[in-house]
Image 1 (cartoon, rainbow, N blue to C red):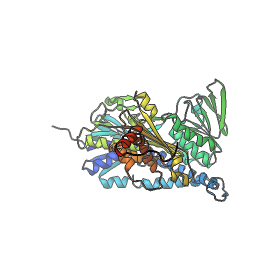
Image 2 (cartoon, rainbow, N blue to C red):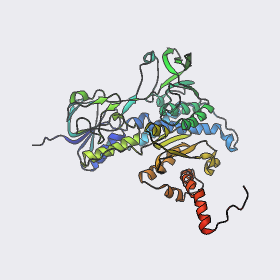
Image 3 (cartoon, rainbow, N blue to C red):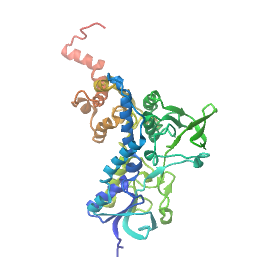
Length: 484
């Protein structure tokens, strides 16, 4: 006789992955319980990540634009120092607006029971959460990830902040040292620099945004350097210490020389760690590695009725990936369809200015995979809309394999995160480059750059010497009307 459980499916974690599963499963008729340890649903993205960071970035850009109005032929504007309390008020108001969509009441209306507390497995099918004992036929672990604070000498005794603290600061820091040149470090460095903070970025890698191609990341770094951000790349953090009103960071330069930096605030943005502790996973035989919970392509753990989705499984740490993985879990757990994840065309974007967006392979990834490729580019310098709006730097790179099939696209430039979406549709839909190049795009728009780069590749074939000779032979074309 089959065992009976309180719920068809239980979900631990109310972030993007967990909310996707809870919403979909409940609307499909499953009896669902959703457990969240924080006081509200929404996860790291809503409260400490995507939403507050993009809100801050917009505020910083508006302030920066006011400082540079002369570039547009406008008279200078008298600006006052930023009152960061008002900035944080705006951030909170945006979070509160979105929170209504991720509220307990909404999920209850969909049919999902929401429980707040710290859960732990006592059995492969049973979770204890405070005084509540909850059983489910299937479970989903979607607990996300947290800021990684490495064991740097003195760091535990040195006051510092992470992305969980930065959006609730009482005032704008006069100066800030940012440990980490990844997406979080880059976005926050530029935002605070534009608001008036003297920012220094430290990273042991030789470039910022180390996952990206060097030439694309360099466009971002050049802009940030011009705006006043200082970079210490290839430098190792030796130690930190508290100097009363300031934090001191000792670095080791590539030459071996010791460098000491001081700032009012120290931001640690050195990566993320999975939230897999305290769940009792080891007691029920679930395998965990340093990057996250082990899961197969159907997102099943070593306990096949327990799934791991989102940042906690150590894969792509993007909100949209977590949502996608939530849909994979629904297919497997609710529809019982053996659907596997496919990350071939996962897009991502760093929301610096200019933005840097990617999909598929960049040159680094292609070389690492032993993939031969050609690169086709188009500069934003030739885009009329971009010139009209200020002439921001940037380019698009289209990577093609030997058969002329796209294997990846990268865009660094204005609104790159929006522009990459055309490639999301084209690559997932297996759209031919000739279709993209032949499609009518509105003029003048930034989106024309996508059409142009596809056209560059096709033009090399259409306007080749071989084609010209053929047309001349068959149709008696007379050739150039103007001299070389």
